[in-house]
Length: 156
Image (cartoon, rainbow, N blue to C red; front, side):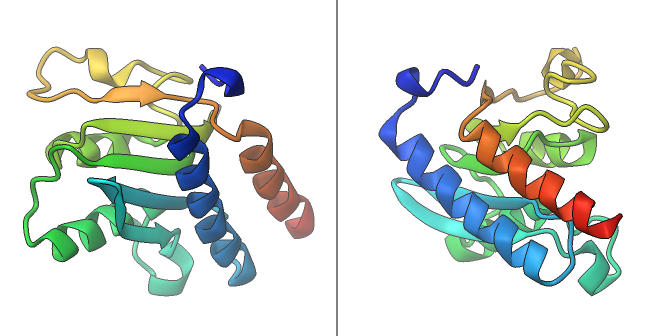
């Protein structure tokens, strides 16, 4: 995970797009996590955390971006899509991506508190899952960690 020399150019580009979303979250007082959904080389959904803004516990960046991508494509099945997210997805978001049938998830920073793909569990190893996706972690990891640390330092 995370060796920048081995990354595809497009992974870095789309993670920068997710970081732009994280910055938008930061500016409105939301935990700065951003996500973009890419299908056939174009962004079809983008979002940042909106839990505080909407009083919706499910308004994580990934879930909101998946909803927007589904609306853009006119279908819930996002087979072939890649989700780029600045923080390792939690259990809820990981399962939402399984249900959406995404092809791949690319994340920036690991989440030692709630990460469900590598940090706290290997969610995709659960035997009852009817779909699995590829994982790439550590893309622009330092930049993704920096915005989160900066946000929480500001709160203290």
